Image (cartoon, rainbow, N blue to C red; front, side):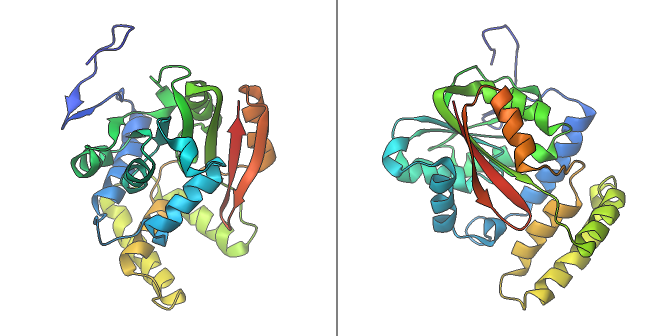
Length: 269
């Protein structure tokens, strides 16, 4: 396939592949391709949440109701396994798009391609058409790029006038245990995937025991893989990112969600 500027992109497994090969892109893709290749559709739960809970969060985070979504162009930027992307498409009938830098989009297309237009892309090197989407949902993604601010600047122009974007990012957790884990993570993240997996398994077991086995082992492993293995894992403050969004032309920015490890901002043009 080609774009209006004449760039040529391959179609792989039915999915447009817009990723230009770089060392950073390959490192990010490798990490999350491994993560989502282990995901079992119909068995696992993304971040231990049910799809109903994730749909409720999606609507609340974007500050919308189900009627607002109908016939709108929506992008799930960093869609991972594509389950949330598909569920939004099925329930609310927007024109739904999902993208990820990892090879997870190929499996997502096989599962959900009838309902969602998936494509592979690098948010740090955006090829998105300006003012293309009514809403962009980007939960827990931009902090895994080489430069969070740059990636946000690449993504934001794709929001239409009066459109909205939701971004969720990590912030610092002020505990000694967290600081120690973060320091150790600096040695684990550069390792090849095969060397990382025993370390992930140890912390998965610790997490599973600490929570009394109330959620499945595989759900704990997903969370631990997401902490220990990404090459990039930046932390930010709400005020910092609110400033970025104002600079990018969003006049209405609000703190929409908070959790132990991060925060979500909603910005409207």
